[in-house]
Image (cartoon, rainbow, N blue to C red; front, top):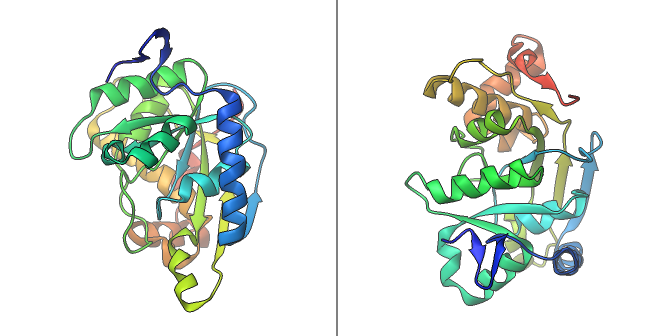
Length: 246
C-alpha cells in the first residue's frame, strides 16, 4: 500500500481530516450511547502531546467507537486487512484514520506506517493481542507494541474495555452495560542494547498486565495469575515500568 493518497503525495495513506474524524466519532458515540449503558472512567489525564500508544483489549468490532470518546486527541487505529474487502466498513475506517495490517505475517508496510505516526508525535491505537478475543478473555500479546514503544519512546495509555461483546443481549431485549477505563500512562524500560525477542515479549506482557488491572477478573484470561499476584503484592513486576513524564 502506498504511503500517500493518490494526488496528495504529501499525505500518509491513513490521513483523515480533523472535521471528518470528529463528525464520524460524534455519530458513533451517539450510537454507542443508544446501544449500551456507556460507563467511561479515566484514572489520569491523557498525554497532551508527543508519541502516544493506546493499548486496548479487543472484544468486538465496535471497540474503536467505544474508546474514541475518551481520547482527546485524534487517533490512528490498526485494523485487520480483511475489512478492505467491505466497501462500507472500509469507507468508514478510512474516514476514521486506519492502518490495515495483514494477519499471520510480519507486515512491514503497516509497521512503517505505525512508526511514521509516532515519529510525527501522533496517537496510535493498538490491540496488543493482534486479534479479537472470541471468549472475551485476554490472550497473550504479540511483541509488536513493545518494539514500537521502544523505537519511538512513546507513552503507553492502557484502555480496558468490558461489555462491547455483549451487544447480542439485545436479542433478549436487554441493554448491555459497556465499561471503558483509561488507566495511568507509562513508559517501558529501555534495555539499552538491541532487545531480544524474549525481552520484547516480556515488555509486551507487562503492558497486558497493566491493562488487565483495569478489567474484571473474568476478562483477564492468559494473564489472570500474574495480575492476581500484582494485586496481592506477591509480584512487583510492574515496578519495571517508568512514569509517563519525560
